[in-house]
Structures are given as structure tokens and as C-alpha cells.
Length: 87
Image (cartoon, rainbow, N blue to C red; front, side):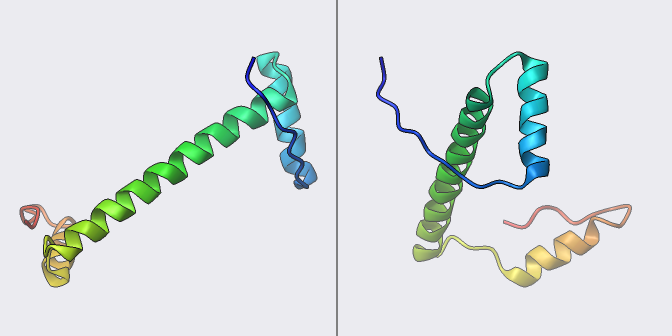
């Protein structure tokens, strides 16, 4: 069995009530709901960190797109014939 550690946190009552409602609806414990949420959040933050490091590496080697080109493209999305994605 995997070793575990108890974590505590103060959460707003409204959020705690929502967790309790979900636990009841899913027939799971409050702890299971919180664990699932933490796993998803940690995965999301690890992915965000990976993508940030990847982007910074691109900048370091000069793989960037001019800001004005991106802005012109974004503004063109409201037109009938948008510009191609800048490269």
C-alpha cells in the first residue's frame, strides 16, 4: 500500500458544501474528491511549467513570432477573411 500523508486546509464553506454534494452524488468520500482535485491541479501546474520552460527555450534560440504580426492576425479574426496564422 502507498504511504499517505494527511493535509489540512481551510476552505470557504460554500466550497466545502460543493465538495460534500459531489461526494454524495458520486457516492465517494470527501477525501477522494479532494484527492482527485489535487491530482488534476498538480498535473495542470506541471504541464504549465513544462510549457513555460519549452517556450523560454524557444525564445533563447530565437524561435519567436513578431508581436505585431500576432496582433494583426488576432484582429483579422473578426473579418470575413482572416489572415493566415503568423509563422
